[in-house]
Amino acid sequence: MQTDSSFTFVLFGGTGDLSMRKILPALYEAHRAGMLAASGKIVAVARHEEDRAGYLQWVNEHVKAHVAKSGIDENAWASFVDRIEYVKLDLGKAEDFVKLRDALQDHAGTRVFYLATGPSLFVPICHALASVGLNQNARIVLEKPLGYDLRSSNAINDAVGEIFAEEQIYRIDHYLGKEPVQNLLALRFGNALFEPLWRREWVESIQITIAEELGVEARGDFYDNTGALRDMVQNHLLQLLSIVAMEPPHSMDSDSVRDEKLRVLRALKPIDPRDISKVAVRGQYHAGVIRGTSVPAYATESGVKTDSATETFVALKVEIENWRWAGVPFFLRTGKRLADRVAEIVVNFRAVPHSALGASALRAGANRLVIRLQPNETIRLYCLAKKPGEGMNLSSVHLDLAFDQFFKEGQMEAYQRLLLDVINGRLALFVRRDEQEAAWKWVEPILNEWAASGKPKPYAAGTWGPAAASAMLAQHGTCWLEEEN
Ligand code: BG6
Image (tube, rainbow, N blue to C red):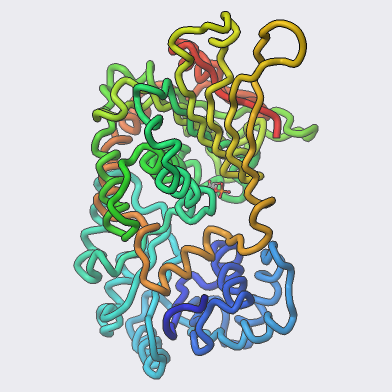
């Protein structure tokens, strides 16, 4: 399906890493799949390249390599590049924004400003756009991290909010654009089977893991001032949690979905600073081995302070204070340089209340639903079955729903979906200001406590993080699901 109307997609940070790796490849994929209106334009804005020819050379050299899924179709690539215009712009120069306005004057259709820049530039860019009237009838896309804490995020939201109305603002959390996250909504609200069980009476605990094998790559400096709690928990993990735990929305329209997610975020049991060591574990990776390759310690990565106390791993026990979830622990975990790259949601259902089949019917590992977001998108339901042969011996077996076997085509990368949604004016997969505030409010006591005292616990790269993360679950009679990919 093509975008509803013509558009002009103005990309600030047009020569940045994000544009190169994600945004331009996603636009190319949408173009190749015939999903962009023929008259739609991409106007890249940067200060490094002199002119369009220079910019296109940069695009050819840097973007092509990141178009992974389909490879390059040279005809489609040529017509994609035809859509691209370039405006050299120095953010400090008011006259450059006049130049931008003039360049956009003849462009019809929806106007999108995508700020693929550092957050410190969001407010100056919005002011400069408003000074030449470009905030009218436009949409603005803000990349994470949006602020450093509640105060700084409010400051950005207040300032941007004076220039753009909330329904013009698209705050990206790319996890919301992932196909399996969409599928979670379909699973929960499209099937009568799961919903009655999706509550405290039947669910013992829930785990959400986003584990990475990668370290901080070239972003040591940024990451060392950020840490895993800000980089992954405040946004991606709490967003996933809110989708797992939300009540059925009345429809899939943007605000119905976001209202329900917000209710979950507001119902998160506040963390008492005195309890933080019981419900939160932070770690930092030391040197280790991942898939046979030695990798260095975090503290020796470029851009990182040698005595850094920044966490590269977080595990949390979270509770939701509402009727559906009271007393059910949600365990969240994320880290860099872990044993595997995996993102998944594990719903552990309660064992049968009485076993007529002997003690083996009470064993852990059955009655479990695992929603694998990446890699290999699957939904796996573990059940107990009788082992063949004499007697009634039970064993854990599983039913698999592997999406790539059902749907051979049509898969989309998160950014492609989200960019199409911006162009088409669909806000459901973008974070509303009140959600973001609720998430910052909840993490803030942990941020403060960790900033004030202590250090992360060490873990060797290539493992599943500090032992304390497992001990936290052991106290609840459970353990992290760690299966080989
Ligand atoms: C980003 C974080 O938001 O998400 C990165 O800033 C992290 O540190 C990335 O690596 C993980 O995303 P994905 O889609 O690769 O799981």
